Length: 195
Length: 159
Image (cartoon, rainbow over all chains, first blue to last red; front, side, top):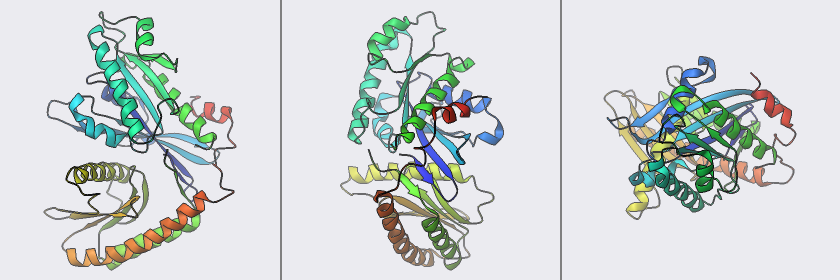
C-alpha cells in the first residue's frame, strides 16, 4: 500500500524480503546499505537478538530519484525467518507493495524454502493479498556454496509460475541489486496501472 | 488489497496545522503523525535531531506488535500507549484506526495535559482523514503514475 503525497510530491513504497531462517535476507539489506551513497539512504535498523538473528525486522529506507517530479522512496523490510516468529512476520507484511523471496540454495534447506514460501502465501492471504497478483521476485541465494542444488531444481520446487528470478551471493553482492531493481520496477509498474 | 493513502495539499496543510498547534498547546517537544504501515505523514516541533524515517517505521512496528498482543487477549487494539523515560516520554494514540499520533515530551509539561490536548487533536485529525478517504475514493482521481512510461521507470535505474 503505497503512500502518495501530492503536497510534498513524494511516493513511498514498501518492499518485504521473505524467506526461511538464515537464507540471507538481512545480508541483502546490509549489502545494499553498504553500497549506496549516503544521500540516498537512511539508517539501517536491525531489531535482532544478541546472536544477530532477526527478532522483529530490519528496515532500510532508500531514495531512488524522481519520476515526473515525484521523489520515489522505497522502504525495505526483512521478516524474521525462524519458524516460531510467525506472528511478527504477519505484521510486517501489512501494507506491502512488493515481495522478494530469498531462497537458500543449499540442498538441506530446500524443504525450509518450500515451507517458507507456503507460509508467505498463507500470511498474505490472511491480509487479503494474493501472491499471484503482487509484484514479486525470486532470489536464489548462496549460489557459491558447494552443496547448492541446480537452478532448474530450485525453479521446479519454488518458481513454477516463472516469475523473475535471480541468482545471488548476498555477502559479495552478486545479484543483490538486480533483485532489488526488478522488484522496484514491478512495484512502479503496478502503480502505473493505478494499483 | 487495502486502499493506498493519498495526501493532497489541502488536507496536508490542515494536518500540519493540527500537529503544530498540538505541539504548542501540550508544550511538547515533538509531534509526529505516522501511517500504520510506517510512512511518516507529518511532524512538528524540534525534529532536527531525530531520525524521522526510523521513528515512523519503529512506531508502526510497535503499534503492530501491541495490536497483535491486544488481539491475543481479546481486545481489538490498544489505542493509547505511554512510554516513560528518564527525561523524555512518549505517548502514542491510534487515530481513526489508520494513523498513529506520537507526542514526545519532557518534564516541562504533564501527562495529563498531553492527554487532554491529544484528545482534541485526535478528533480533528479523524475528521480530516475521513474527508481524505472520501476524496481518494471519489471519481476522477487517478494514480499520478498512470502517465509514466516504461522509460521513466528504466531511467531511475540507469546509473
